Length: 186
Ligand SMILES: [Zn+2]
View 1 (spheres, rainbow, N blue to C red):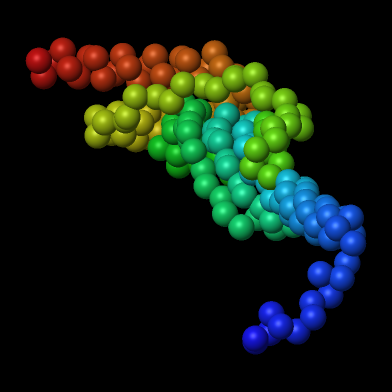
View 2: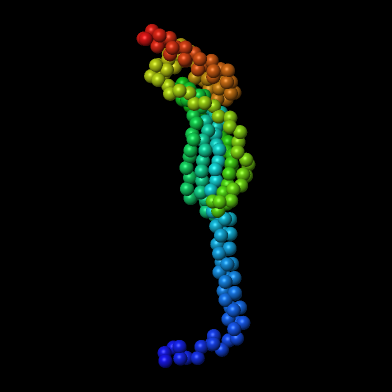
């Protein structure tokens, strides 16, 4: 009765052939799975970059997800503002970050297979200054009033020529002014 009553082809096949068909089906599925995993691994990436400015030493990390080489999601982390960058801003001569570098630290093929395209960079990050207070900003304005050429001098010596000694001296001077004010008011 019913469809079962119709003579089935399988029943007529020798047992060996049924077995082989199952193997062929299994192999096909395996091939498709391998192709999917392979394509995923080849075309879906997560990358970690270190970036920064050679001028003011501002630096940050960047994470990017890409599919077929097209970035679909990106975010920044561990932004480090350098002393040079912060002081230059308050002196009214912010760094334009014209000399930007970028290092491809890690690439995760298929999000799991790690490669180090250019290796992690040695950390050469300058410390961010303590937050500048209103007194600091007033002192910086006073310094500029006394020496109008100061901002341009700071820019040339620190941002362009990386004169760290000059930067240290500038910071020491600022700290001295603040301490003097604290002693007076305290
Ligand atoms: Zn910069």
